[in-house]
Image (cartoon, rainbow, N blue to C red; front, side, top):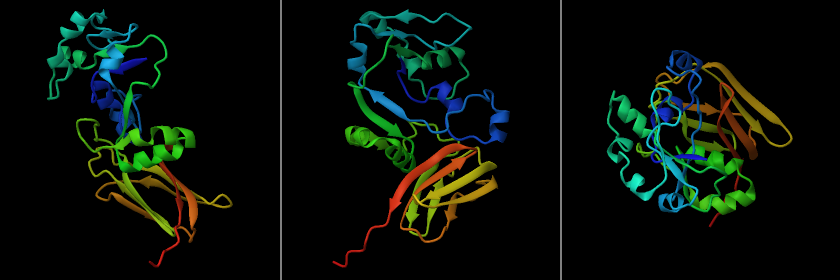
Length: 246
C-alpha cells in the first residue's frame, strides 16, 4: 500500500476528471485517466508510527534519479517538507519529484486509521452512497464528505457537481470549470425494476452550457445512471415521497 503525504500531486494533475477523447489525444500522458477520484484521508501519526512503515523522499516511479526509502524518526524530520508541500507553479524537476513523496506499507492496510473519505462534489458523494452495500454505508456514512476545496482536488476536467431528481425527470449540473468540454458520448438510463428508459447523445458537449435536463415518462421510483464515454459519472435511486399536508 502506497499513500501520498499530500493531495494534488503531479500524477493526479494529469489523471483526474472525465476527459473527452479529444482531450486525451492531446495529453502528455494519454493513458492517465481517473474519471472519478475519491480520497481516503488517514491519520498520519497512526500510520507513521507503525513498525512496518517506510517512506520515500520523492516519486517512487521515477527513472531519472534515485529515490531514497527511509524509516527513522530523524529521517522523517529531515524530509524536504517545503518542497513536498509546495503548491505554486514550478518547472523545478526537483520540487516536482519531492511533491510525490510516499508512505509505504508493505502489506494490506486496514482502515482503522481512516478519518475521512473525500468526494469531489455532492453528486459524486451520492454516487458513492449508491454503490456501497448497506453495511458499508452504515459504517462509513459519517466519514464520507463532499468538498469543493481547491486544496483537495484538481477541478480542470469534467464532472457532475449536483443532480436534482424528480418524478418526471432529472437535472444534471456539470462543473463550469472544465477544460475538457467534449464532445462525449452521453447515456442516461432510468430503471424502474420493471422497465428501462434510455436517453443518448453521441456528440454531447458542455461548451457554454453546463445543465442538462432529461424528461422521461412520469415514474415515481427509479435508479438513474449517467455515463460519459462509458465512464460512470453519476448513479442514484429516486423514490417519490408522499406529500404531508401538515
